[in-house]
Length: 345
Ligand SMILES: Cc1cc2nc3c(=O)[nH]c(=O)nc-3n(C[C@H](O)[C@H](O)[C@H](O)COP(=O)(O)OP(=O)(O)OC[C@H]3O[C@@H](n4cnc5c(N)ncnc54)[C@H](O)[C@@H]3O)c2cc1C
Figure 1: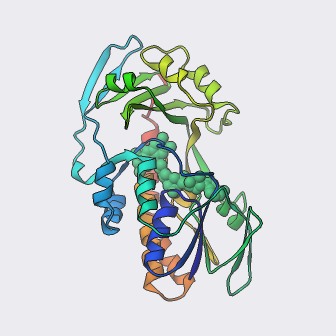
Figure 2: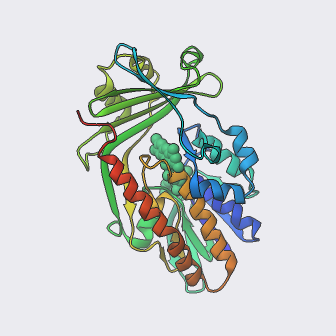
Figure 3: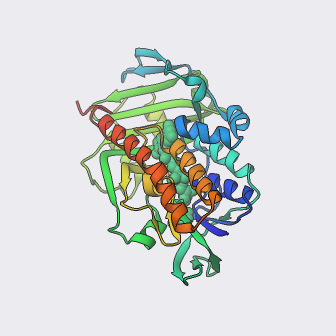
């Protein structure tokens, strides 16, 4: 088969690697001009860990993974108000790493080169295949088009229309970025540090090579628009806080990662020769800590069903039947957590 994957994130790269190993011809287009940077720390666990194991990626992933020793809470004066060791059960089957590192391992494990700086403009179903028009004007024939383009999926909109899904806004905005600051990175030691204030939370932890990684999450009215200037918004929301917050804000880049915390509910994941994988159809939000793992697991399941053969429609239906119930359960757990996450008072 000739498969065109839109999106070179975790789901897209994992799927591309698996499909090329099965002898499919794969094209990957990615809107970003180059691989993403470090991003933020995520945990790969549960079905995602199992998928990584079966893809033979564990040795490489273990090399990139790191373990933060403790969660350390601070108040605005910088006084430590609590320390908690990471005592999650089964921690030998949890890998914590920067999102960029996971993507890099996936990218290095495949031969197909990503066509960066491109997206899918439109597609036509010709009956025996698709004609996919790219943003660079090129037209590619494909037997299957996969939208692995994240929570704001363009392929989802092309296939199902803008009103074809529900975006469940959980009532938070979040931001993350990484910056060079060896002195602060040293001071953070090997711990995840947090400041919690009513309706907002700031995290900082050491990343590789003297860099500091940040994570900001604050409550918003559900459906509140995303700010035009995320850096200015972070200053507005967190500007009065103490501890390390002024230093973190001073190092905020012009365009940090900034998005709403949300989930996607989509009645059907495939339409004809078009299907979705990862956040594009099953976004569960950072509250669950399982979106990346589930994206890996979904890519693994989709590749497995395509390998099993039979007609394409049947394979896509089996993929959805296998993954969706798990995704829906994790989404429900995430929504339940939203009540207590970053308390309003
Ligand atoms: C702050 C934060 C912390 C998180 N922590 C965890 C965690 O601890 N554990 C966990 O498992 N998950 C975590 N997640 C969730 C996890 O990051 C996502 O669920 C995961 O990245 C989904 O992978 P994906 O490949 O489906 O989508 P994405 O990672 O969003 O990748 C989509 C890709 O498609 C590209 N793209 C987008 N639009 C287009 C387009 N129109 N054309 C072409 N390309 C396009 C994007 O540039 C990107 O490369 C966290 C998320 C956030 C924001």
